[in-house]
Length: 336
Ligand code: SF4
Ligand code: FES
Image 1 (tube, rainbow, N blue to C red):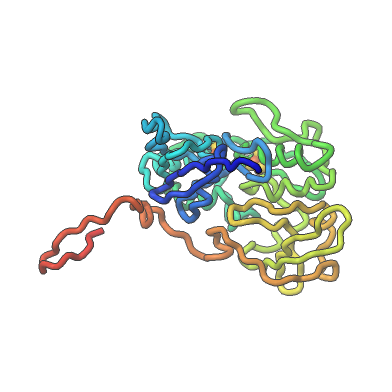
Image 2 (image 1 turned 90 degrees about the horizontal axis):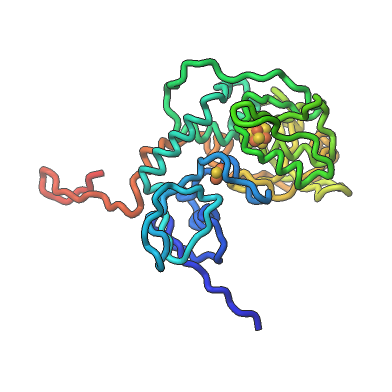
């Protein structure tokens, strides 16, 4: 009989869950769900070794474990830190975390152009969401944003290097999905950039998936560029007969027209099953597809909700009790 592994009790923003040893704080927070889940710009569960690059997922560990209850001295990257039994974590309820996230957002936007009105990723962009929740109205930088020589990476994928946040998801996706990786991160530090080095077209099957893993608009689908704002299209689940991939995709429709084809993504924007280039770029007609029905988009994006919440409204912690004060007429109205 197999021995049962003892689970660890972990508390995130006052809510306790039991997880297997070796689980990261981010994955434990995902089990809690809701706004206790830190944002992740570089971690991508289906891609091995992703994470640890962007720092958007920083959280405060207010109690290390039952065995050693001291708090961790610094904020930790939740995507790369594993839980301990009895660990207490603060995400939404930590002002330090929110301050750090604001600083990380500012840092990510130092060189990122504010071209959302003409960017195909607008409405689905994780950095746009992050900027909306944690960004500030004004920039403190006066220098010009970094620019790059345009690089042509073929007929299917458009690279806008000035939008890239160097999360490395596309490199990991190419490594892990295609038999023939044709691009990577060249140079180091401030000079680092995504490139094929030889201005080469990315053609391997499955390469199109780098578009879906990119959290910003640095890699977009050339076959649907500027065709429609995403919130004017209707996503539907569809399947097709394909001998290379599962053929399970989402069609983004405008009337009868298939504007683009993507993978099916979960509420964290992570692809559940990859699709091949042929399904993504060549099958832009409903005749190739069996439509299953409308797709529900879970992410807090303009596509699904059409509104954003300002963080001030939900910063108040779950643990922090609202202050109860008698008001002028003597009853105990809650003062928030
Ligand atoms: S191109 Fe996109 S996926 Fe690739 S490193 Fe840059 S931001 Fe990440
Ligand atoms: S998501 Fe954890 S460091 Fe990027």
